[in-house]
Amino acid sequence: MSRLTHLDASGAAHMVDVGGKTPTQRDATASGRIRIAADALAAIRDGLAKKGDVIAVARIAGIMAAKKTAELIPLCHPLPLTKVTLDLEIGDDGITATATAATDGKTGVEMEALTAVSTALLTVYDMAKAMDRGMTIENIRLLAKSGGASGDWHAA
Image (cartoon, rainbow, N blue to C red; front, side, top):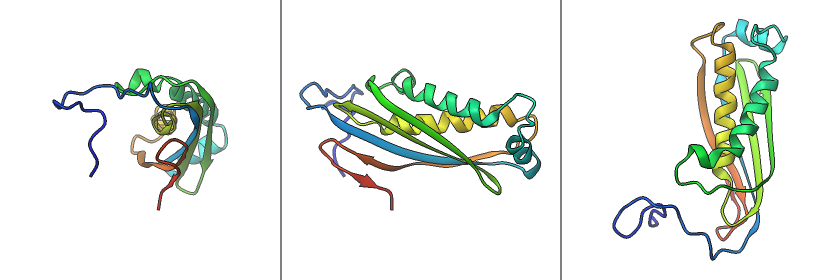
């Protein structure tokens, strides 16, 4: 296992120095899902949720969260994002969120993509909790990343 990069030689947490790295085009895609009861899912799909358009609000919340990742995750670098997309797909028993974040920078955007997905799914929960408090958020994970010294990676 490689050395943990967010710990210095004495074991103290620190922000990794990326000052000497060359900026490259980087992107990352993450996904996750929320299981929802059939009646609540139907209300979301049909635009009948009392709080409004759940999908539209969740999409905007996820994009906004990606832009604030460095404020939420203590050791993340603030990044100039060049793109954030967030798709929410309604399925038979829930909603799948997939986010892609991109930058021309010195460090990757995995955390931004994961933050976008997490926040979008939490927003769905918030907007639909009056209809189904038993929703389950699950399987939030990185699907792929590209760019940087470590190159491309894809989930198995």
